[in-house]
Image (cartoon, rainbow, N blue to C red):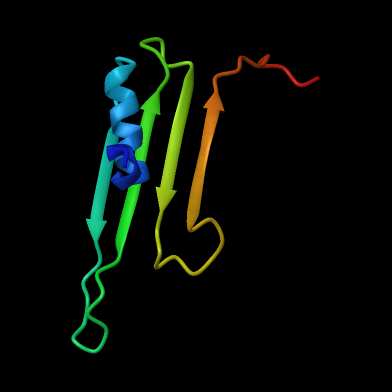
Length: 87
């Protein structure tokens, strides 16, 4: 069995950042649990710029307590220049 099968997605992303000389910024905040429901939920974010010029970004966001839309998001963003005048 390959050791990578036991890794979480986050661990794989952090390994990828290290192997490709990128920086990865990760935050995790635990929500308080209560005795009736002793499960600890976590709000997590990860941000990884593609290069030192930071023209492309990989972003992940997870908030299991967010009831409205966008409680889970994962995507890539590209820097794009737009003219300052309206078309």
